[in-house]
Image (cartoon, rainbow, N blue to C red; front, side):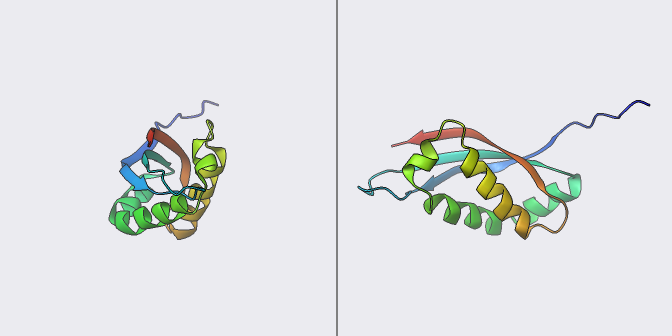
Length: 106
């Protein structure tokens, strides 16, 4: 039996998100761009429709993280936490994975 391979579906409009994470000096700004791998076209449509709400959720979560958590090279905590938080909001499928496509720390 042959298993049909599906191409991944990505939502790529989470770009240039600027946050001021928790740090001792409070002087860091971090710019992020994300690609969200979604489970279906229905999920892609829902994420697009609810973009502003999901954007705010991601920003709040990023701002609550420490600069050390954001600088982690593998970003495991960041991606896991944001994926769980966004999936709790979605009704038509899931975010399968999160890819950090750009990050600039100042």
